[in-house]
Amino acid sequence: MAEGQVAVPTLATEPRQRGRLAGFIPVAIALVIIGVVVVAAALGDLIAPRDPNAQNLLVGDVPPNGQFPLGTDQLGRDVLSRIIAGARTALVGPMLIAVGGMTIGTILGMLGGYLGGRLDAIIMRWVDLMYSLPGLLIAIVIVGVVGGGYFMAVIVLIVLFSPADTRIVRAEALRQRPLPYIEAARTLGVPTWRIMFVHVLPNVLPVVVSYVFLDFAFGLVSLSGLSFLGLGVPPGTPDWGRMLFENRTVLFTNPLAAVAPGLMIVAAAAAMNIVGDWLYERFASSGAGR
Amino acid sequence: MTLGWLARFLASRLLVLIPLLLVISFGVFSLLQLAPSTPERILLGGRPSTPEVLAAIRERYHLDDPFLVQYGRWLVGVVQLDFGTSIRAGEPVLPMIIRRLDITVFLGLFGFVIALVVGLLVGMVAALRRGSPLDRALVALSVVGVSAPAFASGILLLYLFGVVLDWFPVFGAGDGMLDRLWHLTLPAVALALSAMALIVKVTRAALIEELERDYVAFARARGLSFRRVLFGYALRNALVSVVTASGLVLIYMLTGAVLVEVTFTLPGVGSLLVEAVQGLDIPLVQGLVIVIAVFIVVVHLIIDILYRLIDPRIRFGGAHG
Image 1 (cartoon, rainbow over the protein chains, first blue to last red):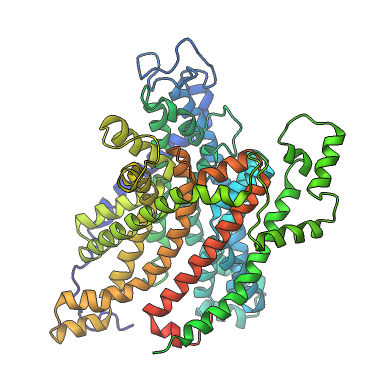
Image 2: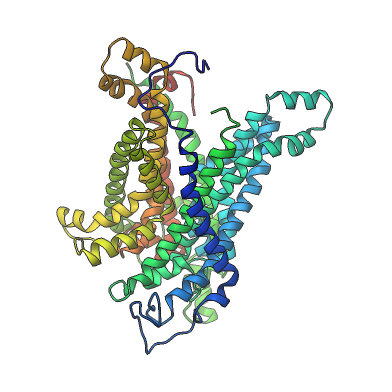
């Protein structure tokens, strides 16, 4: 590319330098949101004001008041305590999905991208096939018919997430392959597996880590979608997706019972997306020469 | 220009797609075997039974035949558009699906049009005002859009526009064209939101890339108006990526429709799938999956044809897919 040779008059020049500090503000907010969710998941029982599963049918569904900061659901359960307790399924499952999918994706992507050949062709065939299918629908059918609950949902989503991760890691590995350091290592007789996992992997890692965050966001959205449909978590579990479904019916009496868990899903997923995007732009795309 | 390439392309594609559908149908049929209960118990749907009843069911559904024979019998039925009988409703599967189809098709197309039109416009504006506060605000909004699952945005819309403002109905699908449009506006917007975010992202990135190319600077230097360069060249080239994305969006509409139909209690194909899965109504699940698989295959076929219409290089490049 003839970079910087001709000053092409573009419509708007990107103010790159100016935006660095200002661009960090959303990331800081996102990190605070993630921190709050992590603390809620870790300390759930200690900081919840009430027992999240204690029913109080005499109270019924009431709007927020001094006793119940976010009101109660139709069984008289405290919405705030249930949201705090729900942080656990909102954190553990998506984390397993993101890390598990990316582990499979990294192995297959490195093998396909670096070794190439027939193995690569087979891997990419599989990736293309999975790409053309609606992942969440498959998860709905398998988890719904075969059963297995929350962890079955997590396993199915790990498998469904891995093709996208494979494609991303493979593209990165392909980008590394023609670089001089690989050639040098090969000339020196470094074994292939050592080049792949000791030399190439660290260079692919920034992309891997950014996509773990992006996968987390999509994993949360997918997993809470399954819970929303009554697949995954058992009935009565405090889970944000499940709360949305159960509390649709009290939208007129205590709307927060359904709106608050919905906002929590969006906030947590958006926070993960923002951090993932920021990591990618800060650490991954610079090496790609963009 | 002849359409010979189209016929050749369709023929080569069908050679790939028919085996693919066979594989999917086999997977779907195996579901019955994977379910955590014996087929006859599922067919009974949890009702109490005697050994005689169970034997009668095994006989009636040919469950004592080898698996492949059962599959073959089912497949012959599917090819003749006989998808079997629903366990719960006791009626043929296909008419049940067709009856629920109109709401889902209406909802999906409505959502698709909203996502595509608004997404393209917003993406173009963001690309043309790149780096401005407006662009950054639109990009930030699209991050929120990607993060909002259809059921969460659905509940928020339902609360805001249905309960607080009372502009739209909160229940039902409506009768007649206008009434239905009014009833399905909130569900369609909920369905469109996250897909729209994807279209914005893709349009913005593709258009920015095109506008930086040399041919744009050259055309401007030759005195062509910016409008002509934008609509005549840059946008058309950017559309190739948008077409790819819109195929994904159309398929996403299906997944989204499942969530949105449950959120808004609409009797469509999506909520039928959820009912079938929850009730372990295996014949109905199998029928639905086959219908959905055919739909997906057709969408991919249309996208592949559109590619070749927009970009002659793919058409004549000898790419057979």
